[in-house]
Image (cartoon, rainbow, N blue to C red; front, top):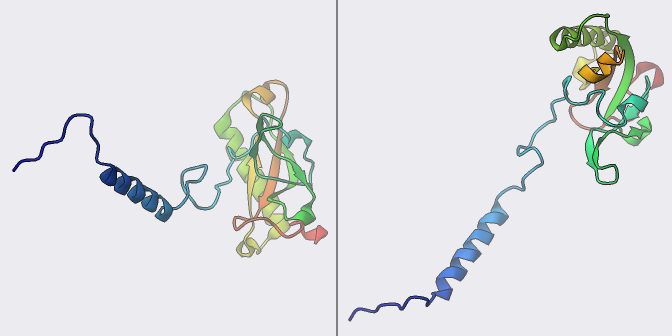
Length: 170
């Protein structure tokens, strides 16, 4: 005997089995992250720029958060954070880029070289301590307005720093 199903009739048991299977699979998968991958944040010359809200208020020696979207501000911002509150980043100085036409490659090379010298002078022999650095560059727009300041920033790739990273402030 052949059993046929009329159009429009459903098999609820099969549908529920599929739904329960998908729910079970979802609980076994790791949650998605904002970037789509888990792992350490790569902080390079594009991580924060002069265009990032809040960065122009940070002075040498001050600590600040990683950039994050602020619903209140309606944009990505960095915030000043007292260094003793386990800050993500600390400015350790500024260098003046040479005058000239906007050249992002030359500016980046200058910034990495200059900030590297400052990093080595503050933390010579301590690279193994887990600290690293990155520069924050002027943007094309701020460069056109006369901005030649490159901020040099120290951070710990392993997570927030315990207090100021500056040797004199420890």
